[in-house]
Length: 190
Ligand code: IMP
Ligand code: MG
Image 1 (tube, helix red, strand yellow):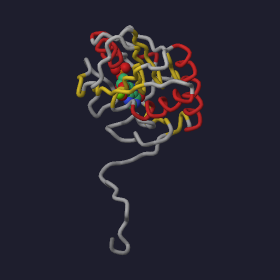
Image 2: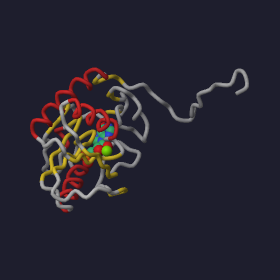
Image 3: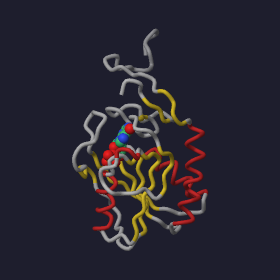
């Protein structure tokens, strides 16, 4: 690097507004510890986690460590389901972009995602798990927007119920940005 050159490359063509904080890192940490306790009292120690990508990966990473502290030994697999383009509203039936690798026949499954909105994403994941022979399918989401449900599906373990705002951070994105924020916030103009 020559002197005066910035070590961080910034794409100046894309605006990056700082979101308003809704839940802090600490709020999230405490809530996940409580959720893990609840999950450990209601599911077997060797529950198989099916984490929904991309949005669910940060929550899943913290949740499995909280589950360990709560005495569980979960296994983890991932599927990628996508229904959003670069916008802020989901549409249609989500596509399966990448499948799980594990055999889940007769397993107790916990589907983990960042947020439950219309319910289409989780409903698709749940159907898939049942088709593959899971003996039980439960659902854990960090966030829930109750006003937006279009499919009859309920979360078994919910972190926070939030108003109908588009939120980002902690894995949640807008046009694949803001996932890296350690907190959850909203953007004023969305
Ligand atoms: P659903 O299928 O409508 O329930 O939408 C769930 C999916 O949409 C989640 O897995 C998220 O990835 C995404 N999503 C829903 N609401 C938001 C939001 O407020 N911010 C970012 N992503 C969202
Ligand atoms: Mg998602």
